[in-house]
Image (cartoon, rainbow, N blue to C red):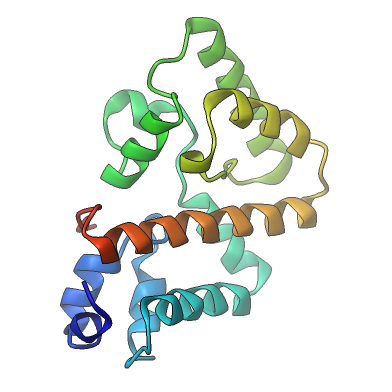
Length: 175
């Protein structure tokens, strides 16, 4: 999909295509639509990141709260977004041993208790071993550090989703 096609989309079409580039946060996509015309897909993505950066801490925390627990109940119940299903599968989170699942459940719980939002990592750029290692390490962070780290991971996820959508690799998810 070229940038002329993106710029030519109606509000509804834009939301249908790009509404889940930030997990379950179509309002961000809706806000960015008004910045058209974009000179490139990268500029559109930059607008998304600038919008996120402009949010107060509570807004950033809200973005993180929209993310599912890795290998959590949404994965086992089949209620993840298509994008998250693919990302978690690629990271090996759909084929965990019972011990690995127990470890992730415990780490997810410790993390959410400490920070108040789920652990977010770009699963597509990780595997189950790196994810568990990062969870252990990031549990040592202070809340502000972890908020910023989580948002940086959201931006990585967004980047990959935008690139896949623009290349036709990923099909849009209507939320």
